[in-house]
Length: 242
Image (cartoon, rainbow, N blue to C red):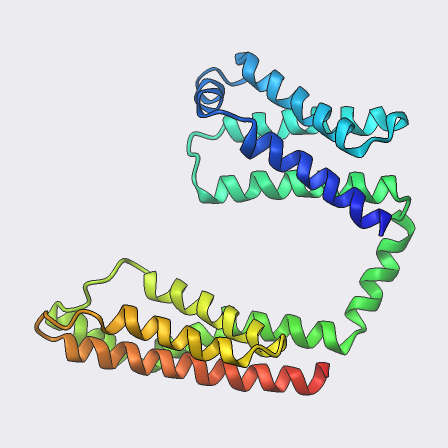
């Protein structure tokens, strides 16, 4: 319980530092001045200070110092990239999370348990089944549905009736399959019906355009195929896990 509390304290310090106590003016100034921005130094010191205060373990000042220095280095790496896009943001947060994770493992003195934990996880049928299930619904199932519905997509494209954002359907499909699989594994089957109903309202609310029926039928085919495959995968995973 104590180890979980320490991890939560470290995560809270990071969230407060990066998202709550960092005004937009600081971000703009850092991006403009980079290493010459005094806001970068204040921001990094704040990361260490909040970590020190929230941990309340006054002999671990060097952990807070480690957090502050690594936070400075990661942010400087991010600032030196010309583009501040989603990929850079996710990498920045991933690096911060790795530092937090390493600090947490050091504090609870569990470096020796990492390899046994990985070995046990890779030897667990439940862990492997759940991991494979999510990977299937995120990657192969999307490609399968794309191939299966390609001729209808081409027909809509030829008619000029696609009317959707680039790759939006693919991302919608990925998120809906993740939700459906999660609902199945957590025994929340009624939520699947709610998800179908919510998507139906959004998709079928506008039929004023010419060719809307084709668009509706195309979406319906893809949606039913996506849900059917994910439900089958979900029940197969449940057979292994439970």
